[in-house]
Every structure is written in C-alpha cells, then in structure tokens.
Amino acid sequence: MSSANTPFVTRDLAHVWHPCTQMKDHEQLPPIPVRRGRGAWLEDYAGRRYLDAVSSWWVNLFGHANPRINAAVRAQLEQLEQVILAGFTHEPVIALSEELAALAPAGLTRCFYADNGSSAVEVAVKMSFHYWRNVGRPDKRRFITLTNSYHGETLGALAVGNVELYKEIYRPLLMDVISVPSPDCYGRAAGATWAEHSRAQFAHMEAALGRHAHEAAAVIVEPLVQCAGGMRMYDPVYLSLLRAACDRHAVHLIADEIAVGFGRTGTLFACEQAAVRPDFLCLSKGLTGGYLPLSTVMTTEPIYAAFYDEYVKLNAFLHSHSFTGNPLACAAARASLAIFREDRTLERNRALAAHLGRRARELEDHPHVAEVRQCGMIVAIEMVRDQASRAPYPWQERRGLTVYRHALERGVLLRPVGNVVYFMPPYVITPEEIDLMVDVAREGIGLATCA
Ligand SMILES: Cc1ncc(COP(=O)(O)O)c(C=O)c1O
Image (cartoon, rainbow, N blue to C red; front, top):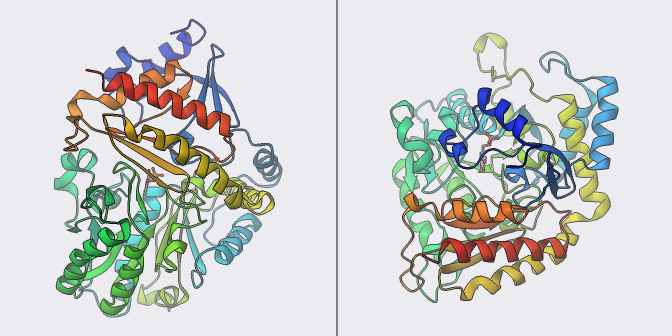
C-alpha cells in the first residue's frame, strides 16, 4: 500500500464497516481510497488508476464525473436539493416520469419512487399483495421466484431472492416463497440451444403456476441475466412464456431490471427482447447513470386504479421513503436519458459489445474455463476445476479473489462473483480499454487456476 493512501485506510478501518465484506480480509487487502473518477477510470490518492470494469457495482453508465450529468446535477442543486414528495411535487420528478412512461413497455404509465433497488423490490412485492387485497383476493399473498435469483438485501427482497450465501443465515426472518428451477442456460444439455433449454425449463414454472395460482400474488424474475447469481443467462422465450402464463393464471409479473435495465442487455429494457410488458418494472442503478440513489417501480393504470378510492377505505398505498424522488437524482436520471438519445448509445454499444464478446471468447479454449457467455454489454467467464465435467472449484478456495487481486495490481477493477469473472463496463469504455480488461482477466484466470 502506497503511503499517500495509508492515512485514509487507517481512518477508514477505524470507523467504516464496509458492505458485503468480511472486514478481516482487509488485514491482507486494505480498501482502496478513491480520490476521483474520470470516465471509465478511478484514481486513488497515490495516483494509481483502475479501469472500472464493473461500473462500480453495475450502476455507472456514462463514466465517472460525466460533464453532462455533472452540469445537470449542478443546475438542479441551485434550485432545489430535496423536497417531500407527499403533498408536494417538482419538475424533475414530473418530467422523469413522463420520459420513463414514454420509454418503458407500453402501458407502464405510473412511477412510484424509492431510493435504492431493494426498496423498489419491497414496493413491487407490497403493491402486488395489496392490489389483490383491494380487489377482494386477500388469499393471493405468496410469491414465486427462480432459483439462483437475487433481488436485494432488505427482508422482503432477500426472501424473494435465492442466492444461499446471502439468504441462508436470515432464513428464520424471511417469508416463505415458492422457488422454481431457473431457466439459466449454463446447465443446458450438450447441443441444446438457449431457447430450447429455457423453453424446457418453463415446464417447472407452468407446473408451479398451476399448483399455486390461487394463492400467488406475483412471479418475480430478473429478465435475461441473473446477475448476482453469477451472471447466469437465459433466452427471451422464457419471458414470453411467463407473460402468457401469468395472464392465464391471473398472477402478476414483476420484472426486476434493477441490474439489467438501461441498455445492459443490448436493449433499453431486457423485457423488450421478449416483447413483454410486466405488471411491475423495478428500476434503479443505471436509472441515474449511476450517480445518485434512486429507484422506481413502474406499473399500469388498472393496478393504480385499484388503489384509488376514498381515504377511509384504506386502499391507498401508504408506503414512503424520506428521499423518494429526490430532485438531484431525478435531474441526473434525465441527463442520463438525454445521453442515450443524443449519442444513440444503444446503437454505439452494439459495436462495443461485439468487440467485447470477440475478445472474451478467446478464453473459451482455456483449460479451466467452462463457458464464456454474453448478453449485450454483459460478458461472463465461468472458471471451473475441470473443463470436461464442469466440476466447480469449491467456493472456500476463493479463486475469484486471486483474479481480483491480480487485476488491481494491473490497474483494473474486476470483482468476480464466486468463480465467475465478468465484465459490465460503463458505456464510455473504448475498444483499447476492453482489450486491457480482457487481457488482465486472462492473466488473472491463469494465476487463479494454475494450482
Ligand atoms: C437484480 C437486482 N435487484 C435488486 C438489487 C438491489 O439493489 P440495491 O443494492 O440498490 O438495494 C440488486 C443489486 O445488485 C440487483 O442486482
């Protein structure tokens, strides 16, 4: 650790308890104090730079300190930093809601705001449950989820997720959900296409809906990519089948696009690839270009109408967060959407994604790589002990940590999920930076798998 970083590390470790971290690990690998960010790069106090290959936990879209988003936030700051959103409103939240309603799958016209992804999932879960109660179906109160799914850390969001590492300890605190095998294509039979596998896996969902529709409020999924579950991917056909089945069984569909929304999968929203409209669309992370905490749950007029009544009937959705719809965050979100429009980001990303996929697929021949998979701007590399049998490395060996450490030494921030090394870069990354990111990942995988 360079001396210019040391005072910050010392002060940090005296008081800061870091998220998703075994703090004892910092005895070996201290946290890196970041002085500033520019574009796809972070810089520490010693002047060392790190290419942000994970978009700072999947939030950043257009680079750090983006001049256009900076200007929008600065301008908003001069007008209004925060105001209560109950009884009051403001232009940034009105305009953002109009823009989102125009961009989201047709029919999602109502935006309910919160300030982080987990809270958006809580909102969607509560709203779905409450909707059924308001329309006289209080028996519909259970949720159907996919194995290997992740929806956040608050108790409701944790309950509807399925990543054991995060969930197991808290199980006594969590509501009981119905888990259905994921359409994840990593486990497909040799020779089967993604579409064939995802379609076949749908039989489990159909069966669960058949058994539980009378008591189920909603099915919740991460469309196309189960990110925290190891960037596991599936075919859009699953979403089409799911939409049709939810309609048939009168069960809501909650699309958690908190990680995959805003272009990560190649389209603005992943649901577009299946041409489906969920009943609830959860958005956060890239919503503000990764600038400020904000989330929204978008829903339809019929669902909104079920809450619209005389106050004394207690049908209103009496849910709130202090910073709901914060004006600065809304201004950042509007600036981010303007960049999508003005720079034709989705179109430009196609070339970047093609380059990223081409370079990453060079790793397919590596003896400890079972699969290189891609969905738009997300690419994942599955490290295994044995390529032929796909036997995984035991998680206790923390092979991904070796990749992480090596990448930091080489000036790249990669943060594998278990044995899965992945790239989810900001869209301002250049082909040369993609080359660096992939080269460093290859070296790291070599080191992590050599013994
Ligand atoms: C799909 C998905 N849903 C929900 C969340 C939770 O969001 P937050 O960390 O903002 O609470 C995440 C976070 O990674 C996520 O990937």
